[in-house]
Image (cartoon, rainbow, N blue to C red; front, side):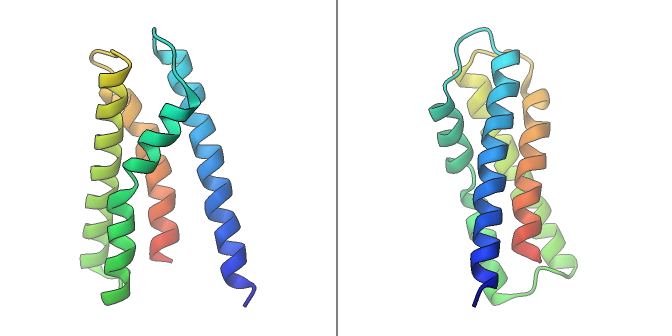
Length: 116
């Protein structure tokens, strides 16, 4: 009964720390002002493929080859869409890969929670 509550607190704490870290990184990189609400909104909106991945996890196990491929695709989709939105909104020309890497790390952590 307690294991669900423990995992739920992990999800919240990873989400909060991840949003604050991406906010700090974008504040240092962007010329224009970055708001914490915009960072939270973009990261939350781009989490949708990870939600679909957890739905697929109900049907098939993600610990095989097919699951790893689907997980990699979900991480790539989440991080590329988030970095594209950040780069477009903050006028950060030619910096999409620099923003996509920390986004991929954050979404990779959520994928590990989904798989295991």
